[in-house]
Image (cartoon, rainbow over all chains, first blue to last red):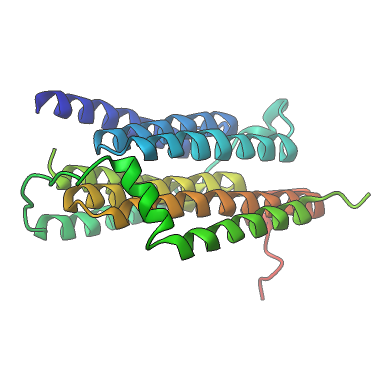
Length: 164
Length: 99
């Protein structure tokens, strides 16, 4: 129990620090690197929640895919030398106030939540259960998701193509 | 760890992401903030799925992760086109639709 608490505290500190780095660092390229750290930390939270398959998906799709695409976009839209990659932020006070208000609102719901007992176990191996569910009751959204991915990636390609 | 700890962590990450969306000037920076907010929601989904022993939350998380990848690809394609047309990705300068 204490081991899990220690792990959770460590991951939470890393996740929050990396998230703050994403929104506060003036260099956009550093922000992407902090985002990668935050995404990996989120994957470790999934591990703490006994979902190793989701940890793998998170690493492959998010930390691998999304970060790569964003780095490409930054390199295409910014000149890496000089001041142009520096970011100034605006409305810092207003943004902080509104975010804090949203957080307080969510916590207001959380404190009303009835305390749950210990978590229940899964009836079997989780990855096998996920696989069976994906081709069983959830096969229709799964196939639609495949179509959506193809359409979105083709659309992105069409948008970003060069005219020459 | 109780369920509330995970939900509080997710709420904090969500608030930080919202702060990024509100304060960043660069369109790519705004997208990074949106990524953080979506991640917080994923933590919530997995935590609820684990504590209720319900597979639906995990399936939903798989779907949101995949849809987020598609969203990032399309969003960044739009950013690249914007940069090509307007030579800027500062959100303050992208006011073509302003009345």
